[in-house]
Length: 149
Image (cartoon, rainbow, N blue to C red; front, side):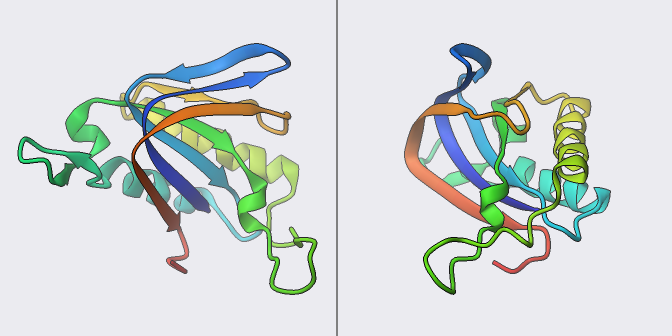
């Protein structure tokens, strides 16, 4: 699994003109599921996201996690995180999971977050979504469950 994690003041996702998810202070997570991903990847990546020390402490240092701050999380499925544009000009998405298993692992990630007591909003898997956010910092972190980066 891959994630683009952005620290936000607020974020929202809209599908067909209706807001399906909204958060205040917290993290926007763009989540991609790969061909070889399993439930362990979801658990690993969630733990990594929740414990990233990217929120400021009293001294202004990035030393606090979402768990420390009590912020919320908005999770958006994004298979394009597995786009490979090394050859040609059109990305290949062969490393992305097919829709059915991708949806299962995306929903598992969201369920695991909610089970940990995190206020978690989500997009709509497979839908054309409009995501709005106020990136605070800006702070953007890339994560990969296979530890490729």
